[in-house]
Length: 195
Image (tube, rainbow, N blue to C red; front, side, top):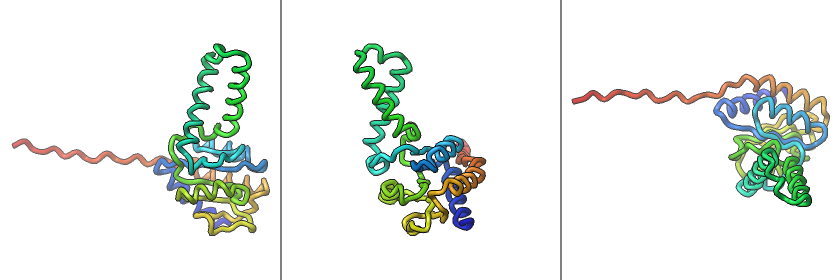
């Protein structure tokens, strides 16, 4: 576990150092709040309520729904929903609430992530399948009933026990929180002597 965790940490550090983003997925009750806290602390994306099919493989369509969610939130904040009837306002409020459940952690994800971190790929088979199909590297907490060959960086651990999830995510947080994004040095401009 420690050996695989160290490899995963180095891999994720490399992604973050290059400015890449990680999508963290954990919708089971034992991981839901932990994934959200870790992703927010590290400035990454997360899905902790429900994985929406096509989130990676049908990204363009999903992104258009995210844009509608952001527009509705902005309209609500600006008081522009008042022009609708009470029934229409209620329907729009419900739409915002439903969108919030699915899109809160990915509303600023304008492109596919560089990697996906999955808590228990047995629970999140669709997320793993979509990431694999899109050729995105996957880091996953895998129990003994999972297939470690299905992902690039498996971390063998009891992925359904909250204490073990906490332990792994704490290690990742300590390792990743001080990663500095590499800024490409501007190319030196050489002056051409005048003739």
